[in-house]
Every structure is written in structure tokens, then in C-alpha cells.
Image (cartoon, rainbow, N blue to C red):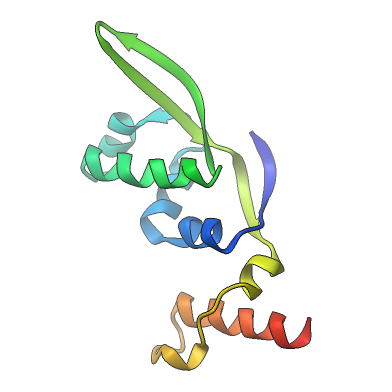
Length: 122
């Protein structure tokens, strides 16, 4: 596990900034399976597995080990880094416009505003 990972793509940034996925990333500082993680955070295992697949597709979580229990393989995952930083290039790639969001204190508004700032200032 790296100390800090820079997120370069807008898609990976969107995946990491999703509230459920961000919580799962935080919990995965300690390796866990989908079932173990579901029990810790109180979310259905299937929903946890869905979010873990999305995080894994963007390289934000990685396989730690595979455990065999009879005919079943349990995948144990962990976060790829202790913390993440979103690259300015990923923020500027966001096509969202701040005016489209009425809640000026929301995270999505602030990300869109930061994206516009990076696009305009460089």
C-alpha cells in the first residue's frame, strides 16, 4: 500500500468521491472481504461488492489475498493507498458547471467550481 496516490482520471475521482465508496476506502486501510466489510459498515454484502468492483476497476483497491473455503473463494481487498489526492487535470476534466447545482455548499458544487478554476486559470 502506498502512502499517497494521485488520482489522474475524472472517472476514478468520481468513484472515490462517492460517499459510500469513500467510506469503504477508509475502512479498507485494514484488508477485508466484502462480507467482512459489509458487517463492519452495516451495508448489504451485495451492495458492498458492487462498490468494491467499481473501486477495483479504477485501481483504488487491490487484491490482498484469496481464501478458499470449500468450493468458495473469498477475495480480501485493501485500499491501494493510505490517502488519495485528486490531480488538477482530473478536476478540470469535469464537465459539470457550478451553476447547475443549487446547493452551493455541496461537494459536487465545490468540485465543479474547482474544475472551472483549474480550466480558466490553468
